[in-house]
Length: 256
Figure 1 (tube, rainbow, N blue to C red):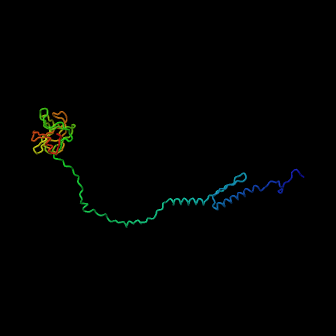
Figure 2: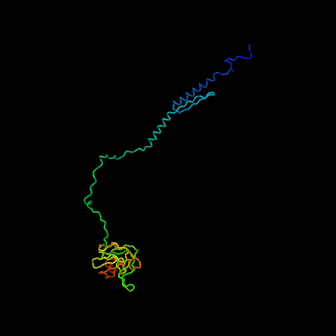
Figure 3: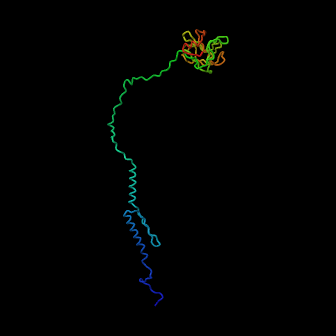
């Protein structure tokens, strides 16, 4: 007999437990079964991970299909709620056929016949100032012992000179006797006007001119101390008279 090595059987209390390795698979099955029940009841997605012993057990994951469906439903409802409802119109819109297509009433004959106002231009007076705005530097009368037979009107050289009245040009050029470039206009009533010391003449002999028409430009030709217009009125050729009262009688004040 061998007393130093006793035999241990299944009934011996100190023998190691042989059913321990089988508990983990059974516990895993219970946990998975519980998770499946929760998914079926719609309580939420559950991720179950079990471990047993030294080795991790596979995880079971389930998606909450009901929650996803509710989220999609809310999304659809938010789209619908964002659209502003259109209230039905109280007065129905008339159909195109109901709209009146009668033409607008034609304009009356009186409205058509009403004439448009015409632009009116101020008529040119028969006599005008030969150089408007000029300063008077000398009037008609005695000067330095001789007769100054006209009125001197001064503006910058090159200022236009205008015909005092309608008429015909009888002379255009150097008139000698210190007058320089001169223009004579016969007005057909026994009177002539004379425009002396011009820098440039703009008309020719025999030309018909109107009151206010440019006949030349101011200058200092002939016997002149500076640019100016020497203006004379003749009652018959070379019979000079005082231009001031004559022009005043024709509505023009030359300032003398």
